[in-house]
Length: 130
Image (cartoon, rainbow, N blue to C red; front, side):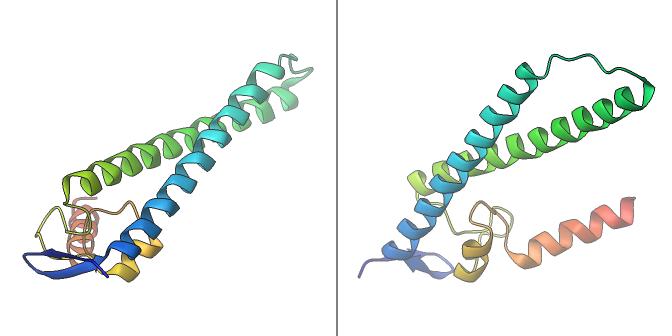
């Protein structure tokens, strides 16, 4: 069983890495399908709202759809960056401190690039600035 070893210690096995790669591929496929479906629905929905209430509902729906699509685009970019880190041999190491990211964290959020401690530091700083 091959192990991927980094400066901070063992990051994960090759089998674990391939499992995460598979999860990322599935997530990417799901996001792309969702985006295609949303675009298809938008193109098919060419009816004009009949009154102000319908117009307001349509505006809210469009706003929510755009918000979801923006979030999905960010997620797709994160997934692509994760694939790049895998190809370069940097996957599984925190981009901030260089320490290994736990396999459990990577299983939950396979496109994360920060360890829990660094992520918490960033969140605390963002709260402090808000």
